[in-house]
Length: 361
DNA sequence: GATACGTGGGA
DNA sequence: TTCCCAAGTAT
Image 1: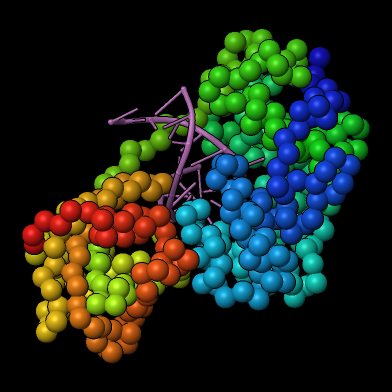
Image 2: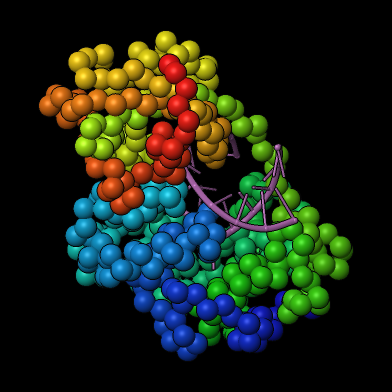
């Protein structure tokens, strides 16, 4: 017998999670809240998202508030969540939605917005607007491959898995409650049909699950082997004046950590930097009032596709020259650093620069 | 289709 | 420690 949506929905009605962006049972969620949470939840855990979601609603109560905000304030509110293109697209999207007077209510309109792909469009359509579509995320892929014992590895099998997942939503009970059905699949994937050791005995679909029957559920979905993670090296410089101001700069708008702030530094490359090499990239040439550079230690940071080793150097200067701003430098008070658009990597660098034991140059 | 794109937590 | 992962999208 096939998995019956009615069994999943009955389970959901008893075990649904309460989450900040979710409406109460029987109510429809605010599209702004649904959209904001869905963008934040892309490749990101619920636990990590919750405090950011609250902070965003505090700072940007409506999509119009978000649209009117300065990009830098949006980036600062996003700092630490990662995948910063999401924040840039979020801001652009808010402006489009604000101009249009609200979110589009159909898949095509949603799909046309920046940062919204097939999954997020379907999630918003189902959860906020009640369209009978099944958003296919990692949870739904996992549940589906197990239910039907689909053993072809990701990502090649993605299309076939999505087609199979869509059939789950065909039943009348699912079409009658698209929002609940989508979120029921999420909750099942998050709480029962988990990646490592699924709690099949608690699963409302256990009797219908081919993966469980065959004893292969925990091994699904199969995944293609991942490439080894290369190592890159860089050096960044912590220069602080007598008043405690720190020198920062803005990264390019696109690409890794795009639009975020950083300590000045070298490029990140496969070859390690010698100290002499790195020092040719100091933000300020030796001048009166500038101390010697001291080595503060090394920060290791793991990105999605490479591991980065950063050597951190620190120096003091009496007063920043006026020319520093002309070269793209941003002078920031040390007590305002918390509120700035600094990615986690740079917070690590600041931490080691400000608290680490100094060794001589 | 393959690759770029963050981060922190858990096994 | 090391590896894997988490409500994907853009190019």
